[in-house]
Amino acid sequence: MTDTSPAASAQAKPRNFFAALELDTRLLGMIGAFVVICLIFNLLTGGLFDGRFLTPRNVFNLTIQTASVAIMATGMVFIIVTRHIDLSVGSLLATCSAMMAMTQTVVTPEWLGLGLNHPATAPIAILVGVLTGTLIGAFHGYIVGYLGVPAFIVTLGGLLVWRNVAWYLTTGQTIGPLDENFTLFGGIDGTLGPTWSWIFGIVAVVFSIYAMWRGRANKIAHEFPVKPLWAEVLLAALVSVAILGFVAILNAYQVPTPRLERIFEARGETMPEGYTSGYGLPISVLLLIAVAVVMTVVAQRTRLGRYIFATGGNPDAAELSGINTRLLTVKVFAIMGALCALAGVVASARLSFHSNDIGTLDELRVIAAAVIGGTALSGGLGTIHGAILGALIMQSLQSGMAMVGVDAPFQNIVVGAVLVVAVLIDIIYRRRTGAKI
Image 1: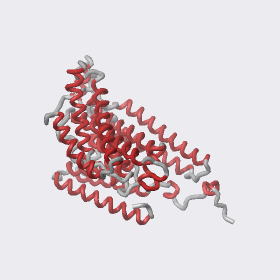
Image 2: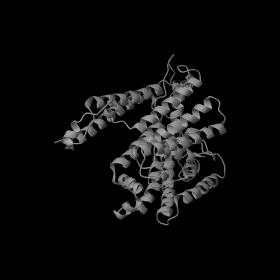
Image 3: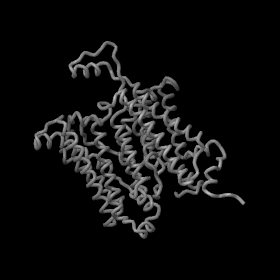
Image 4: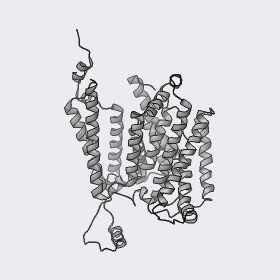
């Protein structure tokens, strides 16, 4: 008689190397596609080993360009998982950006007497932006959840409404310069520097290894199957190399000498001869990491996350089981609105001013990032890390084509084609694996 107990299953040896690692084949495919894209563009911009695409400078620029879309893509996962869509995210970003810009340049100096670059100006502006985005998102969710208007129509209307609300708030003018503390979230003006970047990287490695160890301990405690110890050690080593390698690349991007001289002059000091320094991790990337961690915890460890995926999997069954799907819709859209505001912080801080075209077509990039990242349009399936990787792939394509001189219209053609092919591959993959389409 065969022993099929959990304890016996935990001791069963995997059939091969990849089975032992228990890696998501779809995620591996996305990582492989990203690596291929990087290598191709590096080859086209000067050679496989001498190209300009994989230089520290371009990697740094790629990360700060990806941050705003990736932040919104994490929220779009929840939207699509619950079988909705949000076409208004780019316009909502513009409205939040306009509100924050007007707060910094009009409200705080004229109404509160704080003035630009006051320590309280940036926090107040960000709070105003997040409240604006949350309220507008909740309003969308109320119309969808309680009034029964399809999300496609509500957010299509929002795309038109909020883009022009942003225009009227600023009377069509470019608003700037923005508060210097606010622009720290843009990337180039706000980084940790080499030392703190290494400290962050080491802390991230320790946290990752601890999380893997805790996960293994919990599985053993509940008599669930676990990976072989060598597989856990190998995965921990790969994660550590990836984190520290990323930090090393960003630290290798050197701050220009004239900029360093101005920094020392601002302190009333003289820059030592031959002094150099790297930029390190951008604060915008730290914000993205924080958002990713929080959204992942919400998705995997909270009641709200379980309700979101249960509702997306079967809305009728979820409602019959006692889940308030209407209120859940409001919450999901409110989260999306708050993330649009955070993305607006990053986008306007990177420009150091608010412009009327900020966030234009971001709704398409965000939806594409979530879908390429594996979020099923039929609902119920999606991951936060997949959406971020999808955003990185999208930005890599656009940046790489720009570097090799591809015209903007053809760039959009390629991105559109990639989106369709990615969805087709995903459908084929789900059919073969028996997963939900």
